[in-house]
Length: 219
Image (cartoon, one colour):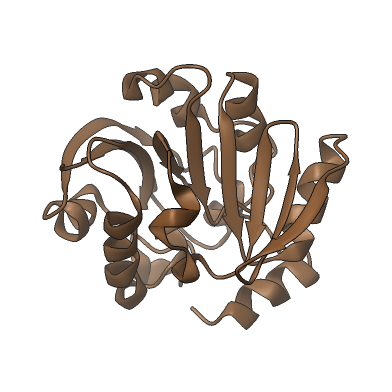
């Protein structure tokens, strides 16, 4: 997906993918990862998700990565935070309240940037990418995530012929195809999500499944 596409979506405020509250599957299954207060959590392609504030309230240090400066700016403003701002290795980093948002290219991250991460939460990163980009994305996570570190990944599955992505239909079987070489995978829950996703329903979907999956990087 061309970065200009996402910049345009934020500039036009076309952000139907943004949830105005913490994600239900996150709240239901985060404890299954077994990471306690003080742990560092990576949130790739974080947008301005309320999930980061929820994780920070649990006592975690949160590192979000996002292309859009608008998203980063709005997150801190909407949460009443005045961030400090620094530059590092091509990333513009805002931080406040135990949360950092790194604005820049996710694929430019190196393991040294994320030394000490204890968990990853992905609700909007994998499914934002078309299938061809999902392959290098899975490889990037395998590069960045140390052995034993768990990921809570939320995928969406629907009839892709009824609506073009993003988000792109990404079934649990697709998640396994992408990640099973490097990660242990456990499916935690599937639920009907059509009624709770009015923007996608308006696009003509007749069914939508959310799936929460736990991945753990093999050591």
